Image 1 (cartoon, rainbow, N blue to C red):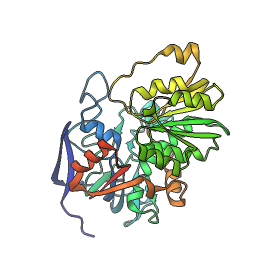
Image 2: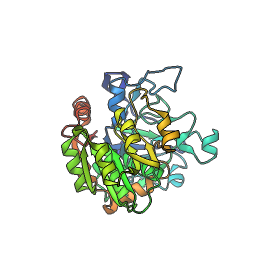
Image 3: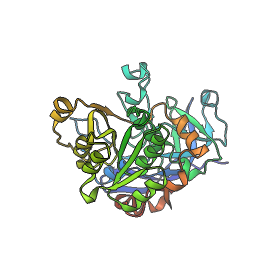
Image 4: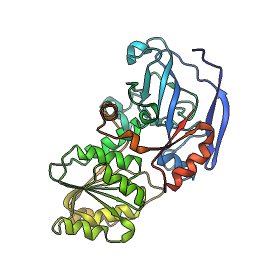
Length: 359
């Protein structure tokens, strides 16, 4: 297949300033891969950056996004060009489907050298760092030579294969929860990643698996995908119900995947003493909490969860063998040119789960 010189891509300039433009198709060098993007998802972090949830280029914190940059970090694509040595390095051939982990490690910092590549100090993530890690809301995409790349079976429909990245994140968060057989597990937030977490947590053998959300359609889907109970937090008694169900103790594991500040304090109230709290979400700003509950009152285990390290092979397997129902999660597919409407649908969330763009 002939590779064109130009392509369509969505470039981010500022909050609320995302533009569909004609740009150069990336050139690749030794060890690099060029894919034709088959499908690319919209993440909650994409919606937050669209609304300007982080200070862009702030010197106080690592910049959340460096613009102008091509957006997108959930994707799958067809390999159309391989730089010298890339075929052997990644086990790929032209025509294969492939995904690259969302972080492109430097392999030189203290974290990378310890195998903790997902916390790489430079932290180049596709769709957020211009030039170094351009994203997938485009017709073509480059995987740098230091990327982590996985071959994807073509038996997974490409719109579902775009779920590999969010599913990997969900797997990592569930693993951070250290769920034991018979545990009462609460997952707050039944967005796409929360629903992935739910299906993965089911594999851990919990005694009671509870889904929390404020959207009835997502709660119904959660029950279909394995939740023993789905609680609408708008009813105002979620904490009391969980405590009552656990003989007054509270849940063993609470995983926060809402991105809403009140869900953190909600979790601190409904989790038992010595329980494990996993914080996954990207929040729009600081959230005040009572640290005495974490320390003096309950002596909780507080675990963060970032990205999907070492989880991509399982994510691919789970979609391939049906452990995770990908078809149930993809609610909308739209052409790349409709990205503005896709962002609006994702921001509302009333009738959507995962929105996938098709370049």
